[in-house]
Length: 296
Image 1 (cartoon, one colour):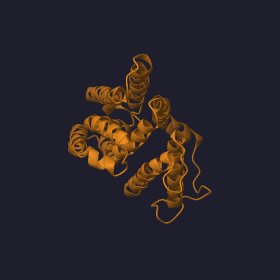
Image 2 (tube, helix red, strand yellow):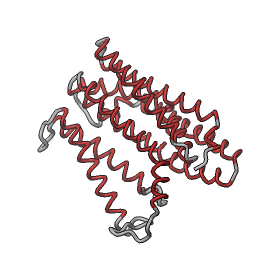
Image 3 (cartoon, helix red, strand yellow):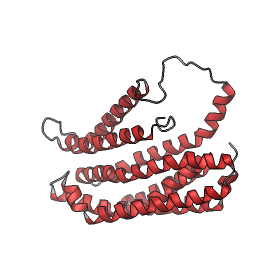
Image 4 (cartoon, helix red, strand yellow):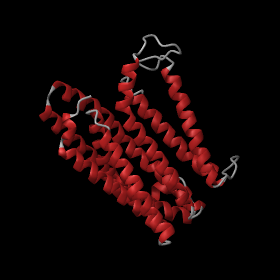
């Protein structure tokens, strides 16, 4: 919502705060550092719940205060027609389904990761938070590209739309390629900032390096989704996300863990394959160009 009212900087700062706070809270509650209780796997869940609640509270405070370009009030000032509300829901519903599907898929993957023990869960949680930071940078770029795509389509500048789409994808890939090299090379030093335990350190370094290789594919996926969203064509991102999660990722993780009995490294590579498949499919769909013809 903050992005929609021309406050993307506040939105990004809020998301970064939530991710960093969660990243630091994870080891405290999992291992019981200092005055914090040792909760094990439940500690990761509590860390996420606390971080999300705090982020939501801060976001609501911003919206109801003078720090938001559009200030909310408990009572609406202008009534919205029911027909308009239905149309808005039809446009936004695929995006909502996409988000719910992604969250449910994470809920399925986490217990499978937990089969390998507390050390793997701790490494998994921190590596996810570290990886989330460059992903947020790409999200920020995507949030700027979406309204630009919509404006260009509305003005009828179709050639400029394609040029903007190509340049945004190339830019996101270039940024993540640099970050990937840094993360891969400095993975031990990055993880040592959070853990001193040798076992967790080795697991997290391996995971971070594998996911560093997948960052450019994540960038393609996110930026392609942003282009679809800017055109108001939200169904392709939804379908690809559902297929990638529930037809590719989860069955593959189940196969390598429950079926073949492999260790956590196989899970990390399964997720890398998930990034690759999702990026390849959505970029192919984008190249077909039918999103340019979408009427909202």
